Length: 238
Figure 1 (cartoon, rainbow, N blue to C red):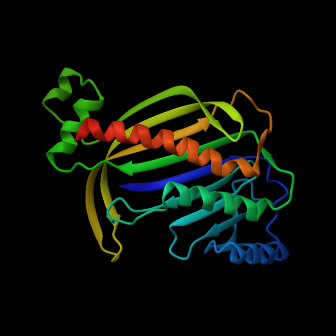
Figure 2 (spheres, rainbow, N blue to C red; figure 1 turned 30 degrees about the vertical axis):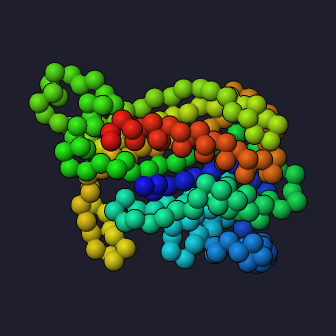
């Protein structure tokens, strides 16, 4: 079950100042595109005011900082909440960036797509998953760790909108335990395996070369690669 998907557009957004007039224009653009978001203002670490847009239920958040724009959709580790399909999220990400940037000449130097999913294992299968992703030391052979992380990064190439780009593909698999709030506001205990995949263009090339119109194509290409790896991870524990 997917619990998070995120698109990131790395560009200069210093010109995006959330004045009252700007927020009113944003509200109009949001309504035109049926994004279902409410524009607000947040203060970043430097004290600057930044644009934040969020859905009424808090599941979707769009934050514009000086050097990046993040579009994040989140579910719950304990509730079966369906997220947008890959096509829908790609369209939504494109619409959000179009609404903020408009006709301004903004180009990004990096793009990223992040996805997190809960693996379909519970109980004893959660403990046995440790041996499938890591080679344990003798000390851990008789004592199953209550928390662990397996992480790997490879570089490969993807194509989108006439771009041929080298990307990092970072896979992080965690055993996560804790408490989370369900949809009925009750708190429940969880012990699950979470796989997070991060596909991002390598930071070696700092040329601002990705137009706003390339976001949808990148999310779809990166998303297809991420889905392929997610399926391979699931097959290891099923």
